[in-house]
Image (cartoon, rainbow, N blue to C red; front, side, top):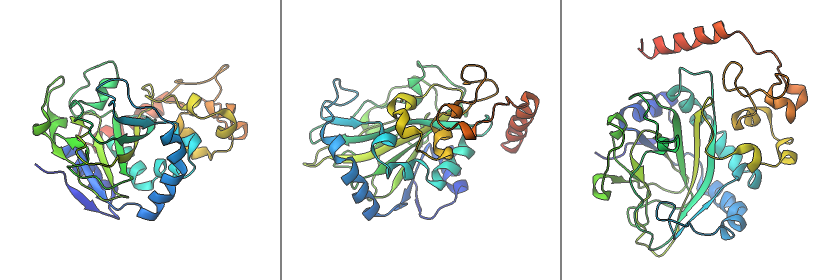
Length: 292
């Protein structure tokens, strides 16, 4: 089964439907190639300074550059893309909110073999979540064209419905092919991995993922973005980064302070809110999704 492609603009409903069914979907040319070129120029010094991975999973010919919020103002536009946020809200419905999980440029170098097929949600100490309960939504934006030859992300389409702990070979998966400026959405439960790069060029993508706000973030956003930079960021981005409670009484600071008070005191809401009302919202969300 091949990975479905949607044209831009697409609706969040279409993206979420494809993710729920297949675990992955591509939206073609969601941003322009010109925007990607400007973004690449902004990130290039940091990418050049990044050492390759130290093990086979990270990729000994692959460079992984993080802390994009701090290092690249243009990357913040991808983090806050309206379609991505709307689809994430739908996919991760049933909880209080979601947050930014990680930001990372992944540059797969020539000669890199295929990565082990895995689930990204294994990062949560290999905990087995119930089938159908998604805990993260992932995107990888193409900074170069993705092809089978250069290591386009490989996906076992539909594997989001399978059991945990399975093992797959490279030939069990489908390679992602998409043009620069396109984006691959994929769930934390779908089996996937970076493809083998048989070309003579780097395959470069920006991995930006989101998770339920009651889970720990893979990239520590508070340390990755220095406080002096955080103080300059807009409120909606700060809250997405985690400067907000993840649920009732979850993630407050000191004497029950709203986390955003640390960087933008004027925006603080120092009331915990009504837990009964929060539970009512969750129950309504479950009913809308046909859950019991």
